[in-house]
Length: 147
Image (cartoon, rainbow, N blue to C red; front, side, top):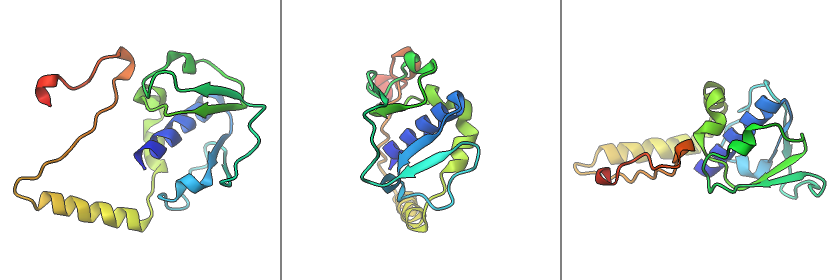
């Protein structure tokens, strides 16, 4: 779910920045409650079978989820992004808008609530925090001594 949320955030930022339509596979949005989208950009939901993308410019994630400065320049509207563009630097300018996008279905909210209550209720809870973001500096955020 987190990977899909980051992908939506990235695509939203590209659509806003370059004034184009965002196309996303509807089958990947099952965890979001409807209506989940504000009307500030166009969103085209496609069926699982997809669309003909042979004519699209293809851009693949070369930075392994990190910031890629090449993506901050304009691309043709018909661009297919393949991979996980997860750096916050790509969508930091739209942070508040993106936070409004994610309204989850009740089952996701209830499972999250139960999990958090269970964790909080443990006397010695061990929480695993996965930090992938290295930002545009190419350095880890966490010091090895913190881990």
